[in-house]
Image 1 (tube, rainbow, N blue to C red):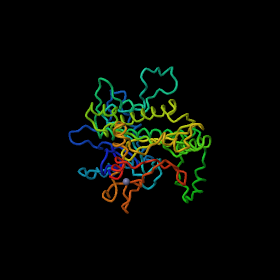
Image 2 (tube, helix red, strand yellow; image 1 turned 90 degrees about the vertical axis):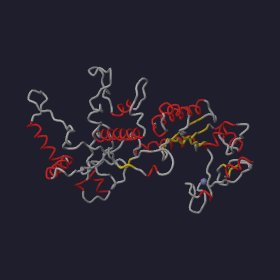
Image 3 (cartoon, protein in one colour; image 1 turned 120 degrees about the horizontal axis):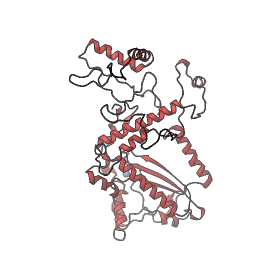
Image 4 (cartoon, rainbow, N blue to C red; image 1 turned 135 degrees about the vertical axis):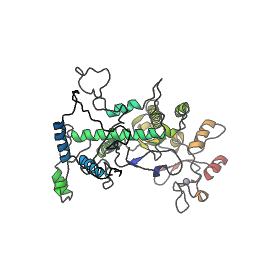
Length: 429
Ligand SMILES: [Zn+2]
């Protein structure tokens, strides 16, 4: 596996993250086998074999590939150099990095060929002609092929009575998932690129638009590919979701509650899995993501059905991955008129900025003191990430004590935080 691995993300403390930049690519085996090793590229050649290679056909294909495929040209070049000096190792980088263009989903041009070799040669990898089990191909129309996403989704499940080498591979599991995902995404991009007509994307006049955008050399303009709104993470996808959110705001007004729901790798549900196989949280991103989604769904269900904050007119959330790969979600809730949060008393009912009492509410106290305390920071802790050069906390800690909840001049709520012994010690550190 190639790709530019981002090591910076693992500086400092925290979970290990496998992250790549730019285009992912795979390395093919050696052109000529090493001494004593079997060749990585096989050829069938026997007169009794009905699948034997027809040399004239191969010749024709070879000529065609030579003429149009830039990848083949590079291989041939390498072979010629190899023929001159057999001892010299020749690295061929199949795909140039897409450094020169920062746009997210640029497909490689002819000069930066994308080649994807799926799975290891001797392993049971994915092929495009795999079908779903138990499907009668002659009678069932539609979606019968196993997609590459389904293939990997199957591979990353734990099953009773089966030891999965992949799931126990720790950091390699992260690499495997990143690798798999780039292949899935590439397949989707290829599908979109090859089916622009069927997908009814808005017609563009490429040459005209290119000239409009100031391209002088119209001859090197390729075909423009329009990503659909259903392509997760694409520009149209984000735009459409943004417009949907704005439509909700137009109908129901500004959201009443903004809630951040974070993922905790110490959730008991996660710890069960960790202890079973003696793994660390970073070794099972799959479990962490699933538990997070289950809990997020349960929370949203609580808001909607159990009406925690009253009747909801609308709700929105956006999930994000933090730098360390843990998820969090930002949630917006739109409350019914009669349940709106208007007075300081309403706010005190829902929100507290105070540390709970250790004696009367020990459970909440332990949760808040473990996960929701900022710092320590301040001049004595100047290396903390929140500390700016001027020796101040960028998050404005420690905050002032406030006697009563009220709205400030700009209409933002200021939450009650009374000065008492515990609070003083913890927030001032
Ligand atoms: Zn701070």
